[in-house]
Amino acid sequence: MIVDPGMKTPLKKVRGWGSSKTGTDHFWQQRATAVANLPLMAFMVGFVICHLGASRAEVITSLHHPVVALLLIMGLASAFWHMRLGLQVVIEDYLHSHLTKFTALALNIAIATSLFAVSAYSILKMSFM
Amino acid sequence: MAEPNLGAKVERPLSPHLQVYRPMLSMMMSIVHRATGVALYVGSVLVVWWFLAAAQSDSYFDLVQAFFGHWFGRLVLFGFSWALIHHALGGLRHFVWDLGRGFKLTTVEWMVKANLIASIVLTIVLWIIAYGVKS
Image 1 (cartoon, one colour):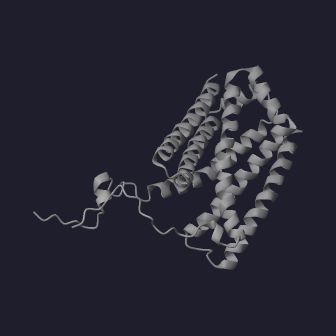
Image 2: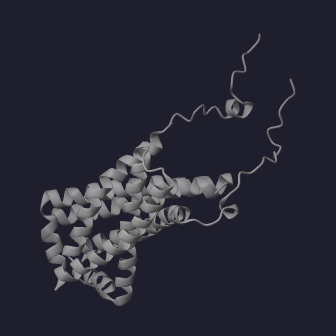
Image 3: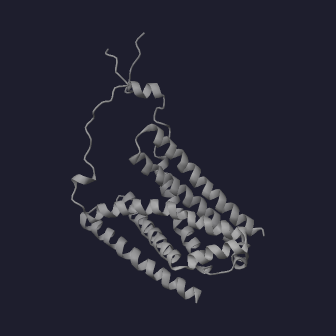
């Protein structure tokens, strides 16, 4: 039987990843979160400036408004996802050994999602206080 | 057909990297865009710390507020705000390029200079506003 080798290299066949099935997804997510970050980060910076030297009670009162809490949580989600995508590219550019690269890639996702979880939970907790 | 040796390390030619080029402003600003991105990643911990402390207790929040009120905390925040603004403006620059515009060398030079100057000016304006709000 003759098997058409096609354009695939033996390495590609062995790994069986094909095109990895992601294509330009990473690029688009990076741009989409970048656009979302512009207004959302402006809001977050404004929120922080308005609460410079404020008491805890004042911060909690501000977070009672659902729009304020939601805009902050959406800002955190967008920013942390953007961060994760960005650092992934940096890791892929500079780390080449398999073990360190995959460890760094996994840690990157773990750190970014953990930071989001902690901050979003904190805001929700104060919003319902 | 010869069996390819998958385990053997092939000495492939390397494409030239940064060190072979004369430093240019646009190249430096590309590096700064990446550097500010990584710095913001680290700095985001401070934002999380602030929210976490506020959710925790009065005394813990006062401690964090005192840190950001101290000159060192202020310095860190100043750097953070500059990195954020610079990275955001750099992102706008990339949007222009994504749309297939602004590739003329004079335009590139103009955009990177505007990026740098605007980031410094906007950071100072932001801090003037911040001190205005506080007092």
